[in-house]
Length: 140
Image 1 (cartoon, rainbow, N blue to C red):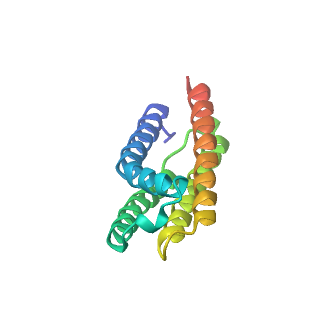
Image 2: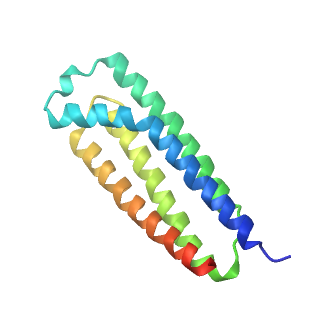
């Protein structure tokens, strides 16, 4: 039985929606750290708040990993297999960037590592958007 393009697109759209929801949950905590770094006030971050943020990031990253797993289980229409693989690779890079960010704040804030993780996530997000656009174009 051939993969149904409509079902595939629905599932991809759900992954994107879930990713955005997870990101919006973690966003304020990311912004809090970003503001402290930009204002050179990292020492203002309490250990309790830091641990809370680490836990929130760990939970979100675990959910991203679940979504990544669901991407690899999808029945992909033949005409988008290559693009889907690029989408998966970009999503994997995004998840890796999230893990890097956790590691950058787990024992105090390593600004250089935090910045590198942010850049990795931004670049992966751009690639995700491009591959999603290409998938949409190929299937419409």
